[in-house]
Length: 60
Image (cartoon, rainbow, N blue to C red; front, side, top):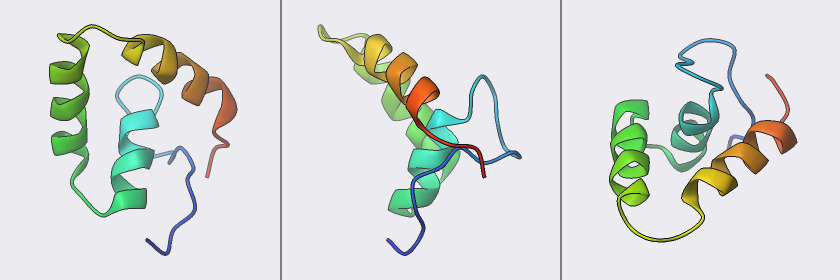
């Protein structure tokens, strides 16, 4: 966990939030996207958290 949390300029699909989280925690960006999509099937504020992270996270 040496990297700081930021949205990378490469490997973005929508906003780069999943890619930034994946780099921060050392997993593949595809796996993080899959986790996000599956979590959206569960009740909770996942989509709102994604939007907040999009606004709050700096670009690399």
